Amino acid sequence: MTDSLDAALAPVHAYLRVISDLGERYKAIRDAEEAFETLKRAQLQEVAQGLRTEGKKWREVAEIMGGVSYQRAFQYGQGE
Image 1 (cartoon, one colour):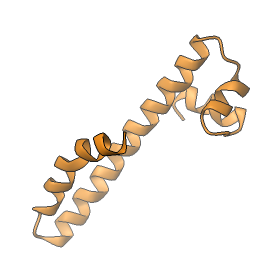
Image 2 (cartoon, one colour):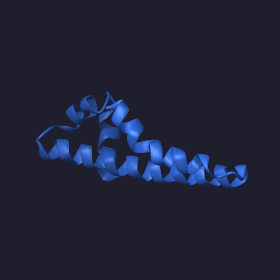
Image 3 (cartoon, helix red, strand yellow):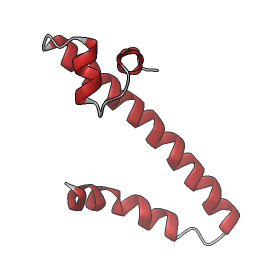
């Protein structure tokens, strides 16, 4: 999984490395960070909602999602 994730991120890494102006590269890195946060939030929401659709209780969802609190699991389900 890590190898495939590294491969998927390789184009982003290459894109950032070719930006020679370091100030512009920094801005692009921050943009990439924001885009990844949006992606992460959407994926966590999808996982939490999917687990609930499977009939899991919020406490079970929380445990599956790394032992977060059930409140946090609920927030993930809400996209927060």
